[in-house]
Length: 340
Image (cartoon, rainbow, N blue to C red):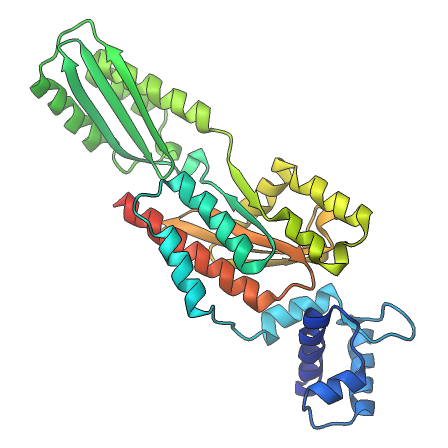
């Protein structure tokens, strides 16, 4: 553990480096932060912090910069919460809590808002098919042998199909079948939907059941590939860390690899809440000059996806955590309202 003075020095260095992108010297710390000790004492503390791996010295004559280990300690133990300005909160809620928004458009809007709030690359992954929930099945009798089937899988899919039946059905019979199907399916996730349930639907509801099962399977095949929305990639070029053309090119190439992004966000979605991945904690080498802040979002009480931002390790972590958490909670609120 670090003693109180080392904590103060480390926090001062991280805060200064985030703000200026320039190595930080002892005189700068003494001048800008009232620590109550001399530059010589601060210099000794900086040397100790470097020796135990919390700081690095990029050049012999330069000041120090935080290492990945230093950033990790800062995020876990030193960072102070940063409230989002009221006008930004109002903007997020105004744009994301529109009841007319479809879930897909809400996630796209969330990606754009997150990028604007953080001036970073934003990433939003849509729910996987495993987490889709049967919300509603509606059958409408258009003619005695013509039925319109509408299937709603929350939170992302609405499918319709017009089916022709060999048997003729009255509107009352179709309504009863619709009610029975809803009692059987409502609230079931795709993960829970196995061959047994599908066979039961066909057995109980005949040709209507078979048509519904075909529609379900078609929908899940079409939606099986997870969607990820990435916005604001050009903002990374304004950061001094990416003035190096090769480093920037490697990162842009990584951002075009959907499987890489899904892996990053997918691992984040396995645990609820905000998660910060710093520098070399990223398993994908081209992203090891970056940090990623993610947060899960929910439908009801169930985690269904994750969103986050990607930027240099010198990112303003307090700002990023607050923005990501705000957008994730607002998306959760919208999707949960629509789920009711």
